[in-house]
Length: 417
Image (cartoon, helix red, strand yellow):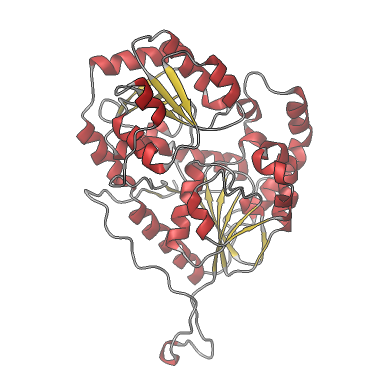
C-alpha cells in the first residue's frame, strides 16, 4: 500500500524552515568529479488563477516554500483571486489575452489542453498544482504533481454539470471527453512523482491514471492572529449567531440544499461566502434568514470563521480545506459523510456528519449540534496537524528527493500513454 503522510501533529505552528536559496554554485570542495552542482531552478504551475479556493491557497504555500519560483498558469485574473499573487511572478498563457475567459473559465475548458501545451517552462523541476491541466504544461524539467483531483469535468462529468446542465455545455463536454481524456492521461504519465491531497484523490489518481500517489494533506493559510472585521451586512442585521458556508457556487457544492434547509430553520441565521456561476440563482433562492457575500477580504473571513457556530459542508470534497481553516478558529463542521471530510473531521470531536446532501439531513445536523455542542478548544487542537510550516517542510523534502534522483516517470497511464 502506498505510503501516506500528513503534516506532523503540532501544539503550535513552528517557524517556517529556511527558504530555498537562489541557484548558486557549490564551492569546489563540494564538486563531484568535474560537475559543478547548483540548486535546481524551480517553477510552479497551476491550472488557472481566476478564483479564491483551496487550490489557490496551496499555490500561495508553494510560492512561500520557493519564493523565487515563477508561477505559470493558463488564465490569470488579479481581481478575482488572492491579492498576494500581484506581488509574484505570474506568467499566463496566450489564452489569457481573451479577457472574457478570465471571468468565465468554464467556457475555456475545451481550449485548456492547447493553452497548457503552449506554455513552455524553462526549469529543472516543475511543481504542478493540478485539478485538470497544469500537469500538462510543456517542459523538459522533472515534474512533481500535487493533485487536488483528476479533472472532474472529464471523469465525473454529471456531478460537475449538476442536475440542470446547459444542453450545449453538456453536449460539448461529452463529445470532447474521449480526446481530452487521452491528452490528460498522456500528461499524467509524464510525471516523475505524484502527490495527492487526500486518500480520496489518491484513489482517483490510481483509477484514472494507474499511478500510486503519496498523500500530503494541504495546509491551512488563514492567519488566526490577524485583524478581524465584522462584515457590514451582518452588522446591519445584528447577527451574532450564525452558521457559515465558504464555497464556490457550483452545482456539486449543493449550496441550494443548504439554503433550502434554512427555510425550515427560521430561528437560525446563515452566511454564504463565495462566487461562481450559480450566484444569481442562489441569491434568488435565499430565504430572509440567509445572506450571501462575495469578495470577502481576509479580515472579514477571519471574523466569520471565529464567530460562526459551525461551518456547513454539503459537497463531496476531495479534502475540504475550509474545514481546517474553520477548525483553526475552533469552529466545528457539519458535513456530508463522504470523501475528504472523512479525513479532515473527527465525528463527535471536531464535527458531525449528515448522510445525504438534502435539506432535511442538513437541518437535522444543525439541531443535533445545538443539542450536543462541541468543544472549540478540541477543534482548534485538531487543526494544528495541518500547519503550513509542516507542509512546506514536506514539499521541500519531496523536491530535494526528486532533484537527487534520476528522471523516472511515476507510472504510465493505462491507456493513451
